[in-house]
Length: 117
Image (cartoon, rainbow, N blue to C red; front, top):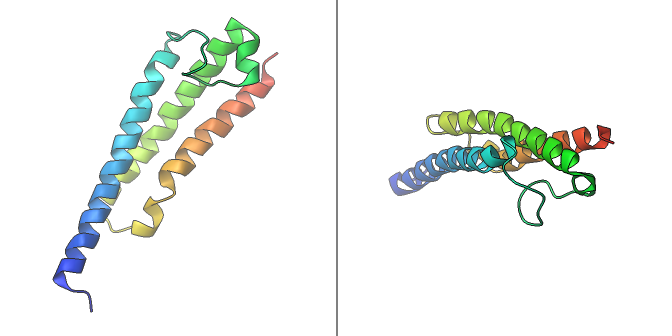
């Protein structure tokens, strides 16, 4: 039998995980906005720094704009899951979700970059 204190700790950690998903999604969207509007020139710190992106300015902006869109789109279900997890106990599912959403956006962007010349 679970004690009242243990139940409170479990509920609190699930609530915090929901907040974590929401916060991660919002941060990813905010960081994507400059890339979405082509405000970040080629650099070694910020953006999709893959070989194809550095081949030309056109590639840099196309890849980063596409990647920003992918990150924004994949952040929406992350935020929705966070809101759901604030109200529903799905603790085993919470851990890998941010990684899965972000990896999906990265893979989608890498596949797009492969098509560029």
